[in-house]
Length: 165
Image (cartoon, rainbow, N blue to C red; front, side):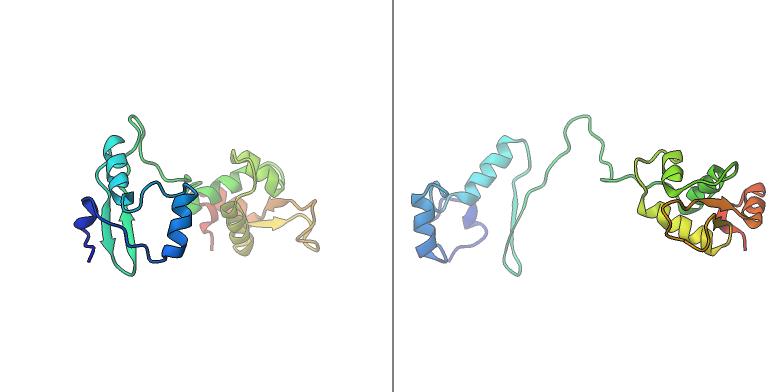
């Protein structure tokens, strides 16, 4: 029987479905049967990567460890906009002089489009009554803007952002 150690050496191939394996070989999708794991090891070594790890746990697994390109620093795929309190304060400051739409707030925050985080913060500020709609009878109006309430002005004046009671 084939073991994980034998995968690293020349070994025969016993395809689970020979009716599929042979046409795949003849069509050129498979170069040689029984060489796939050794090819992976060789290609990882040639690329300067550690040898792949093989495991059997609820099926066969191959783990290939990759390294970062020289000079690259690992970073998350997306940067957090900021901490919610800080974003709340920034939104309040943008509304300090005049009412603004969500699109205007987004641009004022340096964003290209309205983010989910901005939507969340606006909903929270509305719930906290630190901001209000300029057209309260039509919350979904495309002309909707937001303005500070007296409570929002007080929160901004004391520097607590949206933490006002």
